[in-house]
Length: 127
Image (tube, rainbow, N blue to C red):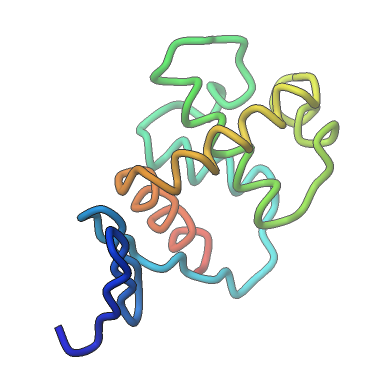
């Protein structure tokens, strides 16, 4: 490809990245201020869950990961404090929120499905 720089296992493309054979879209920017309830609603809608799951004590994987993703987006998009995010997600401890932010950040670097989900949710929020 003419617009590609090959760096061993990592190929950097203009407009995105290709890491170990996985193409990642650039994350869209949010053009307006969003709120925690809007993020919770967008994530719940994306994963076809009731919005009450965002604050429920349920620990099933089908509910837990979308909740972690919503916590990550709250921290990333609006910069809320960890204790404040925890309160808005059913009274969770700030260390639970910290774990969620770190887990999603780690998966974003290696999982194209997570990155696509974040892109789609950001678009729903006005990106």
